[in-house]
Image (tube, rainbow, N blue to C red; front, side, top):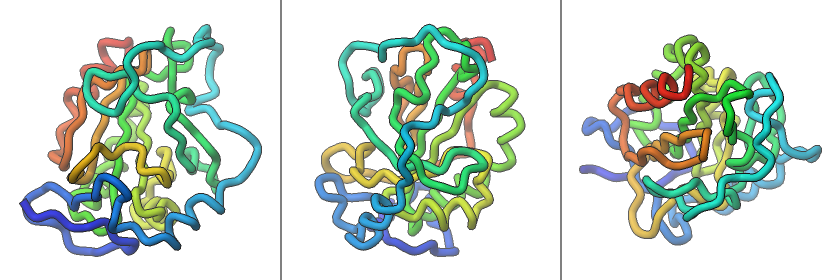
Length: 219
């Protein structure tokens, strides 16, 4: 399949094969230093903002286990992102712990974390499709976090009208595994224990596994 290197600008046309560009593993060699720096310097202070503020939770300690970013692992709690919360106008620091909901008290029943780049046609297709799923995702307790590998969160959110989900930058390329990474990267995470249920590359507009997880957890 055709794979592009991560670029810093949004491109209108889409890849014909439905799988996006590839972000290089070590060092993410397509990302410009200036864009990555912009992603880190525009983070506002003031601590962490939770994914949802409804309900108290008994989740005082993050799940222990084998941490990683691949299926079967517990999502690494050391990952850190710069994120626009839904409806927010400033980037704030967030991490996997902000979405941990061990007892369901916060109403998070499934978590979808997407890693994309602005030059990736399949990433554009997925971003374009997400608003149409917002109502059903919200009703099921599905939280979406879209992370840009090229520091373009602000432009991406505005271009695709994604202000109802979490959109941010992944300045440390924490979602990348060694070697070539096809984008978009999609992680389905169970918020009860932060285990990664599935990791896929590309976009098919099939969210059935994500929705099944939400239903299983009470959504």
